[in-house]
Image (cartoon, rainbow, N blue to C red; front, side, top):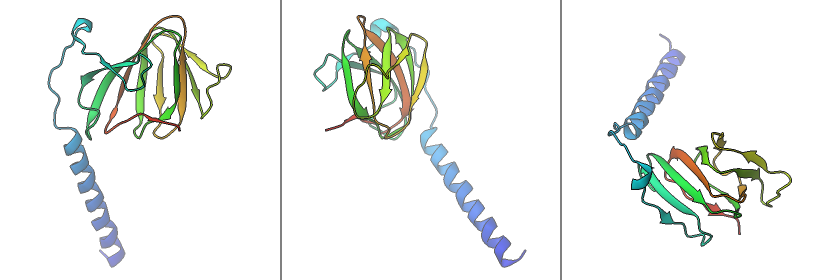
Length: 151
């Protein structure tokens, strides 16, 4: 094995070792969790707009997987914001209207009905609207996460 091949092999071993370490840190094993809708602990969000959140799994403030449910009241605006993590979202009930960018625009928003799945890439500014009914979404990601509103 020549010097170049040794360097490449050493780098490969180093990268694989770091990947294994990262997987071990986030994959410490799940516990069996069952939560019925009646057992959800809803908490008011600091937006003051009637939005509420319930943590189903994990801790969104920690560097680990999490799943939350979000509740949005009827006829509400979800102001432009982003998140530091990539998220996967499913609309559980109601109809959510989604858009990207710093200015909410109902004309450009996409209609997401119950069962719709979408992703929210990290740091991509997006917004939403609800119609005449409450909307519930389920969000999963790997924390830590936050909601960073545009100023």
